[in-house]
Image 1 (cartoon, helix red, strand yellow):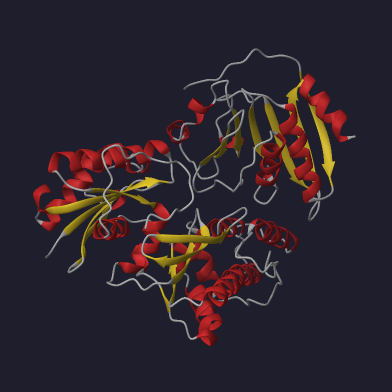
Image 2 (image 1 turned 90 degrees about the vertical axis):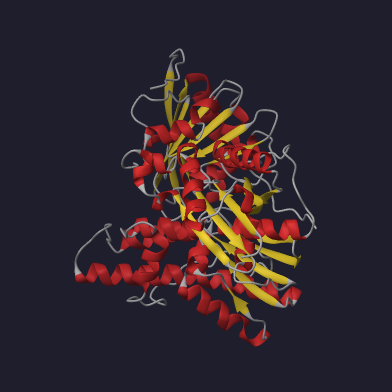
Length: 343
Length: 162
């Protein structure tokens, strides 16, 4: 099975652990939400599943048992050490340090965004130079990856993240949570040209985004049409579908225009997507269309590695170790901070 | 349940109408210039009302150069300045314990300015906010903003806005 790396991710809502090897790919990946509840002595309420401290040890034990390996079989540990909630990050980092010290294993602190980017390497290689669009609930940015560990942030959102816009628009339209998949589903029956929603900063010539105004525009239009969340009438459903499709089109349009702009500027060897919104089918289609004239290939990770996961952290750690970069036990967390190059 | 108690002084409520996002931002700047360490603010108003925009203004008014983004997903952002600002977003939180766990009550320690978007999601009386800002939409870009604050501060804001 070759060298096996453990990944730990606790930066936000969920706790997850994964084992990754270059030869076998992702061997096991589990999140607290999927755990066998018996280990906790009963059902885990939502709140406890978010409580990283209670879930991390049983989660680690589950993952190791499933792979049938012990601490001595590991070759290194990767852990998200920022950005995120300090308390949550500390739980993951302290646990990773203890394992590293106890097992005499190398440790790598991974920037959450680097993890998302490296989710593209889970299947094998990672081509550089690359331009990567990172789109999730908490982040929206374009990153130039000149080589592994060499990052330049080209631009990001000035207010709401794209995933946040999807979620809030879903909520405004009375669609179920999470809003991203719900808006995409509702859009399938709607007309993306029904409403001309704003494409903020579309022509700014920069790689920056703003989605706050779109949210307000959708809300005003919904109010004007008398759409109360959850309105059951056929006319209401049609209008919700049109609003969802038009809002999605506005988000997707801006994301793909800016992506094309970044590609035009940098002529990378490949364009990658990362983060939960990379699972959106219309976004993938639109980026493919916009980038087609450039001839530059477009790629994204499997859906389960688009959202927050520990497999991407284990994979990123493997690349750190491969470059001879090891963090000491003095490693700390950082609540916020831009993606910086380490290579 | 932890409570944050403050001696109750005379409070006043003022109403200010803004005609554009720029005016709303400038009102934020004025609020930022008028408050000091230990102030806890609650920002209330539906999706798209302009809460984050107001925070951008407040942070600028406090003389902090920081990029203010919506913390809905990351739950809290900290902006470092002479007086640090903790910018919380309680939109996604469902349980009171979650509010404690993200460090909301730890941040209210008299040395910081704490801003809570969706502060009205907290149970009644859980926190006594010094300043409560309610934003309602009166048009596409116009807003009616009511500010409930200690009398001195309210008077200063009311004077500045006219």
